[in-house]
Image 1 (spheres, protein in one colour):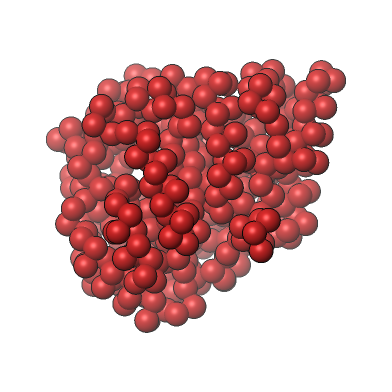
Image 2 (cartoon, protein in one colour):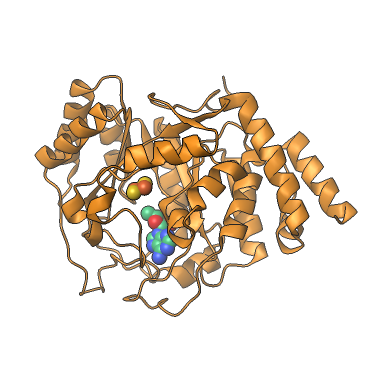
Length: 355
Ligand code: 5AD
Ligand code: FES
C-alpha cells in the first residue's frame, strides 16, 4: 500500500481526526489494501467498546405522506404514483407491542414530513409508548420541525432523533433538494436537537448525484466536529419516479470504506448497517457490520404498508416473507459471529469528553 495512505490510516486510528485535505485523499486515493487495513482497525476498536454485540432497533414507518420534494426520494410529493398511507396511534402501538415481544427495546418512528402528525398527536403517542414500555427508548425520524416542536416531543419522552444532514456542502445540498429547502435550516435543526438534549443522529447517502471526495471530506469533518451519537449512511439508490431515476447507485465498496472511517472518527458512535446497503448487495448488512457498523434496524411496519414506503427501487423486506426481519437479522448476525442483544442499545460513553 502507498506509504501515505498507511500513514493517514494510522493517524486516524490513533487521533480520531484528519484535516479536510487528508479525508479527501483517504477517499480519492483508496485501494483494496487500504480498505482492509481500515476495516481491521475499525473492527478492533469497536470490539474494545461493544464486544460482539450488535444493537437492534425496530423501525416503524408511520407515514408515506411527505410535504417535501427531495429530488432523490421516492415518497417526494411530486410522485403522484406513490400510494400513500398513515398509521394511527393504535396501529403504531400495536407494532410496538409486537416488537416488544420480539425483543426490541428501541422503537424508531420514521415517516415523511406529514402535518397530520401534530405535536399533540405525537406527544400523546410518545407518552403512551413510554408508559407501556418504560424500559424502551423512543427514536424519532420525522424530518425538520421547529425548536418548540422538538422540545415538546422531548418533554413527552422521546430519547433520540435521527435527521440525516444529507451533505455537509451547502451547494451540493442545493442540487439534491428543491429551492424551498435550506441547508442552513437542516443544520439548525441538528443543533436544536442537540441543545434540547436528544441523542442525535445525522448521516448521508453514499454515491448521491454530484457527490465528490470533497463533499465527502466535508461530511467527515462535520461528523468529527458535531460528534453525533449516531450516524447513518447507506448507498444512494435511484427511484424510478424521481428526477434521479437514471443516476447510478452508490457502491457497497465505498459505503463499507466510509463505515470504517466513521468508526475510527468516533469509536463509540452508533452506526447502522442499513436496509439500503442490504438492497444493493444481498450480504450488504453483514459486510457493513464487518466494516465497523454496530446497529441493525429490522422493519417492524405492518407488512401491508411496507411496499408503500418506497424511498428507492427494489427495497428489501417489503414482501410477505419479511414479516420476521428480527429473526432474519439475528441469524445473519450470528452467521458472522455477532450477537443481537435485547437492550436499549445506548451509546457507550455517550457524549465523549463531556461526561
Ligand atoms: N436512496 C437511498 N437513500 C435514500 N433516502 C431517501 N431517498 C433515498 C434513495 N433514493 C435516505 C435519505 C433520508 C433517509 C430516510 O433515507 O438519506 O434521510
Ligand atoms: Fe427483513 Fe431479512 S431483514 S427479511
